Image (cartoon, rainbow over all chains, first blue to last red):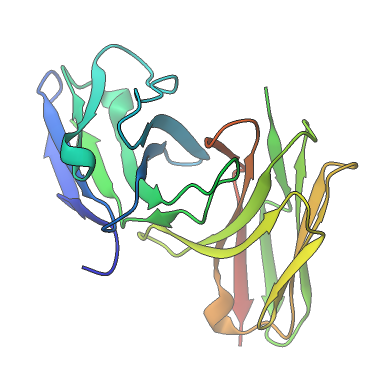
Length: 116
Length: 111
């Protein structure tokens, strides 16, 4: 595909359930980001993957959040024991970092998560 | 910690007006600054990326400028059109690949 894809586009779950969100980056992009966008808030960085390096997890809000990236391509964001405050749009982006400066990020359409 | 502020938060203008959207940041030690557009229910689309060594970038009716010393960037939209209606986000890259985003300016251009 030409762009970043995310699935599902919408997810409604009950409080306490686990959810998995998927991101397929643009082929060849070594960098992958997860963000969270809550109503009325800006984009909140969650986690950053770059090639085979250890991911930067500094933005994960709690240990209920985790993410992995298999084979340097597809990434999954997992939220365990979901809470109502986890309701948000989760956005994924990929890019090709150039040296010490970041290249343009390409965003997926997002997954809208609603926790009842 | 980098903080990014966008002013105004919302803007409604008639078609044809020239617009200026503002972005300010607290830490001037940045690598890049990027402007994005977000349509309702969609992801972000990159508009312009300004590297730290540059002062401005232009694409069509859009022009973005960067003044690192004062911690400011502006996005200029010429001859606005209804199709320009969207939220415009500014993102600042500091000493890592992780950007800090502003909360955006919601723009409505009415016919």
